[in-house]
Image (cartoon, rainbow, N blue to C red; front, side):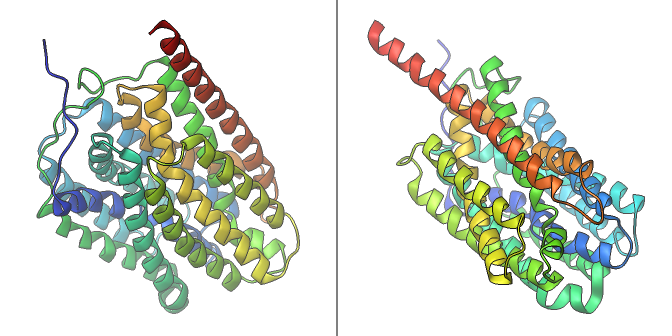
Amino acid sequence: MMAEPELLSLSAREAASAQSFGVVSLLFAGVLPALLGALGDEHRLSAEGFGWVAATEALTMGAATALAGIALPPRQLKLVAIVATLALAAIDFAGIGAGGTSVLFLRAMAGVAEGVLLWITVGMIARTETPERWAGIFFTASTAAQLLLALSFAFFVIERFGADGGFAALGVATLLGLGGVVFCPNRYGPLPGGDGAAGVPPLRGWVALFATLTYVAAGGAVGIYLQPLARQAGLSADVARTALWTSLAAQIGGAMVATALAGKVRYFTAFLAGSAVFLGTWAVFSLRVPAFVFVLANTAAGFATVFVAPFLVPMTIEADPSRRTAMQSAGAQLLAGALGPLASARLVSDNDVHGALVLGTIFLLAGMSLIATLHFLAVKDRAALLQRA
C-alpha cells in the first residue's frame, strides 16, 4: 500500500523564505487605491479604468496561481522565484509614464508573475498541519509589508513624485524579494490528505471555491473605490489615504488574532463576525459622515478582511479533505479581486460610485449563504458517520 503523503516540515528560515515570495506578490494590492487615485488625479486613468486595471491584474494573477497549482510540479522553486521576481520588477518600472490602456496591459502582465510567486507560498501553506495558522502568519507579514509601502506612498512618494514615483518604489520593493531565494526550499513533497497528487478539485470543492469567489469579491467591489467614496462623503483624498494605511495597520492586528485563534475558533464563527463588520462599514460609506468616522469604519473593515482570510483555507479543507481545493483557494481569492472591481465598474460613474456598495452587499450575502450550506452539509456528514460507527 502506498504511504500517505506527509505534512510539510520546514525550518523557520525556510518557511519565512517560502512566504516572502507571496509577500512580494501582494505588495501592489496594499497601495492599489493610492496609486490608482494618483493616476486619476493626473488624468491618466478614469474612474471606470480603476476597476478595469484592478480586475485585470487580479484576474491574470488568480489564473496564474490556479493553473500553476494544477499543472506545475513543485520543483526548481528557486529558479522560478528568481525569474518571476525579475520579470515583475521590470514591469513595475515600465509603468513610469504609462496611462490608460498601457497601464492596463502592464498590470495584466504583472499579474502573471505575481501569481507564480504566490503559488510558491500557497504550496507551502497547503502542505502544513495547521494551514490557517500559517496563512495567518503569511497575512501578518504581507500586510506589514503593504503597510510600510502604503505609509511611504501616503506621506512621501505620491505627494512628491506622483504616480511615477509609486511605480518606481514598487519596483525597488519587488527586487528586495530576491533575498528570499537564499533559504527557500527548492522543492515540495506531494499534497497530504489524499493520494498526494495535484489536480482538479471534486464537486463540493468547486462549490467551496465559488463561495470563496463571491465572498471575497464583495470586498473588492467596494475597496477599490475608497477614494471616490470619501469624495462623495465630502471628504478629501488625504482622508482616504489615511483610511487606507490605518486599515492596513488594523489588518496586521486581524492577521495576528486569526493566527492566535487558529485551531480554537471554527471558521464559520469567524465568517459570521466578519460579515457583520463589512455590512456595518458599507452602511457608513453610504452616508456623509465626519472624517474620523469614515476612517474608523474602514479600519474595522481592514481588521475583518484579514481576520477572515486565513479561515478560507480550513473551509475548503472541510469541503475537500484531499486539499486539492485548498491549493486553489488563493487563485479563487485573486479571481474574486478581479470579479469585484470588474462588476462594480459597470455600476459606477465619475459622479456616483455608490452602486459598488449595493453590489458588495449582494456578493457578501451570496457567499455567506454558500459557506453556510457547505458547513451544514459537512456537519450532517460527520453526524451520519458517527451513527454508523
